[in-house]
Amino acid sequence: MPSKNQLVEQLDPATTVLLTVECQQGVVGPGSALPELADEARSSGALHRVARLVAAAHEAGVQVLHAVAERRPDGRGANSNARLFRAAGRLPVQQHRGTTAVRIAAPIEVADEDLVVRRLHGLSPIAGTDVDALLRNLGCRTLVVTGVSANVAVPNAVFDAVNLGYTAVVPSDAIAGVPADYTPAMIRNTLALVATITTTDEVLGCWLSRAPRGVRS
Image (cartoon, rainbow, N blue to C red; front, side, top):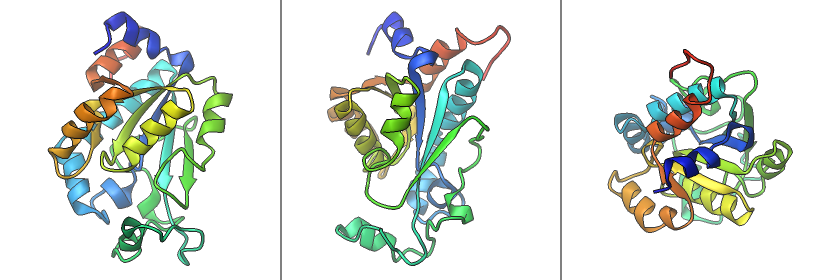
């Protein structure tokens, strides 16, 4: 774990972006295509903590970027080269562009200044999308990665961020995967090797210490 001073330096609002990964209604909402994952994201408190981080980022002047996975109704451009993609195409709830399924899920609140990046292909919210260019234009040095799932998209985001030269910070209690015991194992054995592992409260402490007096999330 980094020292408090190191974490404060890494999480400077001027050079930090908060990324929410697939925190959309069709993934973590009540009508999820993946009910086991949605249940874990909610029952573990991870989704609530993502909402707290987003609210604090808004108050502290940290840019928020929401990464959404979606498909065209005709499937054009979508991957079919892995079992995961083929199974997703058969699910009763589809992440179709323009539908409720691809809206950011409550209790996360999307502000006018937030950026939303939507992808039609692949496993990563960064590779092959506009995210890297947006981060560079924003002067980002540190990417805080939250959301789902710890099985696939979250580690993809962390690896891509590190490969592109960003410092990745992962609040361990603001990500979720299935089964429940897989997430801490992924964090301990993989993500901790390449990212700064912290907690929601520690991130909030860094940001709220810089926010205007009286602000609390």
